[in-house]
Length: 153
Image 1 (cartoon, rainbow, N blue to C red):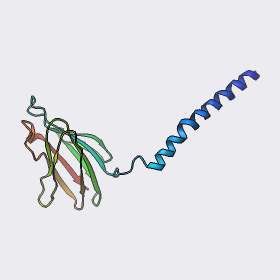
Image 2: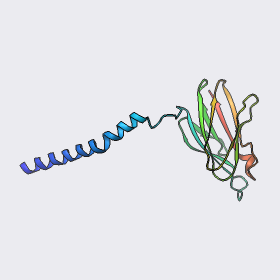
Image 3: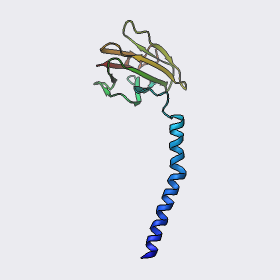
Image 4: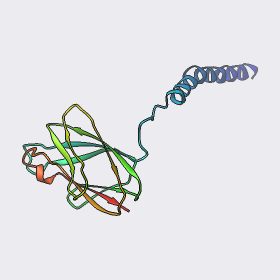
């Protein structure tokens, strides 16, 4: 019986030792360097893709989002944001050059997305409404299907 208590104590000691060795330094690094620095509260990571083989394949792919995302009847993304907030987009092209542009008058956002290079775009949602995003560079047969919406509530 006495041996079991010592065995239990030894196991607990080893567990605490391993937590101290691996866990505490990781937490210290996380707080010291703030591993999430530069990531907006409203962050959306998007990839653009257009498969030449499939005429309806041009699409925006939401890889990660801190905002609510829905999809319309043909699977185009809809991003929801509150009025007065800023969205930070990280844009990536998976296959060829694409464009990321708002089709609304008065919004001067039109960026070229090059494969292998992330493009960062910020949008300030100052007015309620629906904003359409299109691919502004003809990228192939599925180009006209590359649609996305932002709904500002």
